[in-house]
Length: 181
Image 1 (tube, one colour):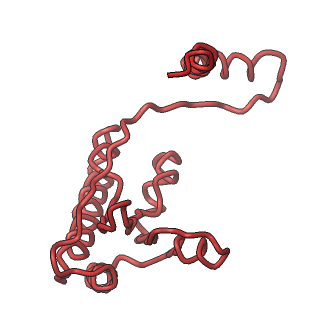
Image 2: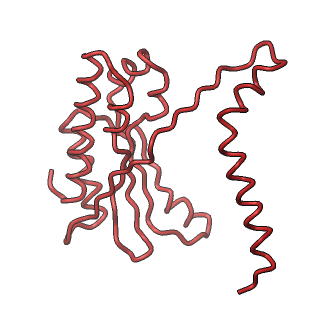
């Protein structure tokens, strides 16, 4: 093993880690000092929790997509966005596994959440990714909405909306993984 490059690399890594640790403490002060109209900076530390479900045997990616879209229509969840990242990369001449992102939303619920606290906009719309891993296996992944629901105390109406949306997203991802809708 070449140890000559390891020590400088370790020092750079530790220095970067130290800067990241200090950023939450120093950034708000740096912005506030000497700047009359500094923007408000809030940093939230929420665990990186993702729900990951493999496609069941016999379910191909196109079946999963059809099942998710059908379930979303049944639940009155609008497909507001679709990015076929893999196809875009291949169109640019780059090899890519299949990667598609589907975004679902019920706009009237979204605006209620954002009016309560704008931070919820960062989690919208609700997304499900269809991903082909390095072994050729297909997965559906989404943010575990429980962490957002449990992060803040919501008024009863918004709590009910959040729980309903979570259940509907779980129904959509399950429909995709099983091919049943």
